[in-house]
Image 1 (tube, helix red, strand yellow):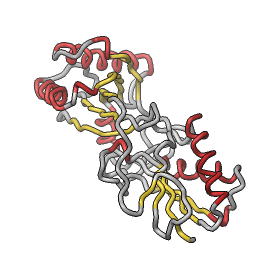
Image 2 (tube, rainbow, N blue to C red):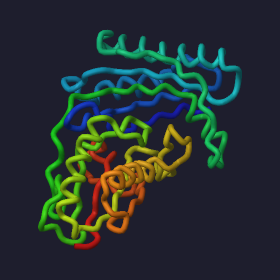
Image 3 (tube, rainbow, N blue to C red):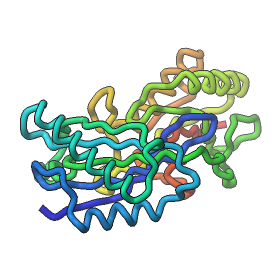
Length: 271
């Protein structure tokens, strides 16, 4: 099968500001862990393209498709990860920043996948996760704010820049809960504001507008993140009549880089 590759941009929250993460995926033939010359060239191009001055860590994860026994697939996925590690080090990447080299074994097929052959080809891969130093939050566009305030109008958007989620998760982190406590107090103060809680993600393939929530194993991640914030506000006695929630998947990019697209926003619907 023809070797494929693509680069996905994700966001991995790790500090007060968003931290950028780039994932480079190398795809393998069935039951193989060696790279051909084309894959090697693509890997070299990736290494040259990244801003090495901003790299903090690199993580390497190997995967297999859903066929075969678990023990064999774990070994094969580890071998694939090792192949990529060796190739990166041969291109000058220092071993001390490669903090994870792990074979994850097989990836089970999603229930909603129509083309199983294509899905399996994409599951036979290694993900090279490059974590960069945090960057400042984006400059707010007109009608977009980073805090709830009194003089908002219908259509204004509140970008909750410190509401953080683990990758693939809809569960709030401890820092996120502290931030939502502050937001809830302001919403209690400005009781005239009604709003929609919007969940967003980044970096899924174009044919998949929504991502899988690893907690439910269903393709509903952005919706579940919005619902999580909604339920949190309910516990803080924000009236349910003031708010709705909806997941928008990857359909509403900010256009400022993928590190800002994995987010939750409040959009004012009534004042």
